[in-house]
Image (cartoon, rainbow, N blue to C red; front, top):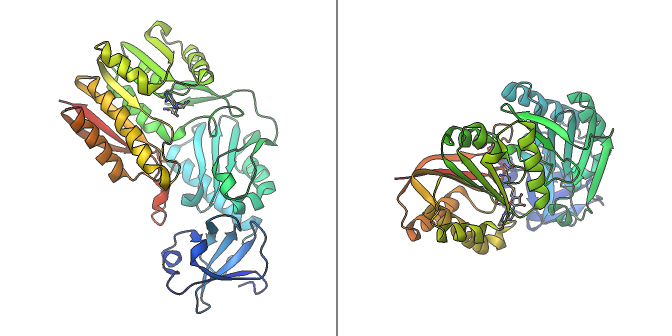
Length: 396
Ligand code: SAH
């Protein structure tokens, strides 16, 4: 162990989660800080008896005061170490996903790189840096990702709200090279243009890949409603699946514009697609008043509960949209309903939807529990990584 490195010594009884290889060290677990680590510096984390537990990145402003890079005393946290982690993460994707041009290459804590996300879109890698530790190595990620992927540019989208909790300002712009204005990707045979600079998050919701494929398989000859459509992922999948008509809702005009553009990329019959700048909460009620029915409904809302304290309000919002969607299901119709709020567990989400079904007097069965695609792994030591959960329901 490097004797000179600063140290965090934990309080008695607070070493259990690290021994279970959970990567977060909360401020309340720390008895004292030895030395003067700056934001992002590597610290040794020690049990009260001095036993080595982990190498971690220090984050002086965050409740998550440090995030573990490694649980091995012999490791040195340097560029060679981080490079190996990146390499392993990318190699796993190649095994899982083959040679696709749109995939998540690095999924933060679950890939052993806390606070770092990297998505591949065509020849562009988009990086999100969300922790003080990942920020400390900011200059390293761009060139390393370029070299390991063979991409031609790396673009930074460090504008997630969580940066504020780490005391970090937003940063957006090219890290290496210049990305094209739109990155063209092909997912399951459907082309999309991704706006890496101005789109939401990194530009495209790769986590829903498998569920878009499911929607495609359920769409044949039915009326489809896609709430929260963003740039049209589920809508285009339903069109490809042979939907009679697809109505897609989003409050973002920019998202809808790109969705329409994406329809054009695929030579779909645009008359079968209707795009509506509308609030899902009120539009579902309008459809109910009009007596509309749909054979397939997709609800993939934004994160209603960014943190624990938002859970009660979020639960009401999830219940509301699911209740109205269930009332709009045709006999035998399917509902794919999601929550990407880490603070809402799969169990709680199912209870909320069950409450909605009871109030709607809807007789539905669970066909399957849904989650994020394979390139969004969940480390068994980090259950928080399982943020996306969904239910495939079918009306009687
Ligand atoms: N399903 C999409 C991703 C959805 S992201 C995909 O596969 O790509 C959530 C979307 O909900 C965002 O585009 C956001 O603009 C939209 N949104 C947020 N609040 C909304 C509301 N009340 N009504 C309609 N759309 C909303």
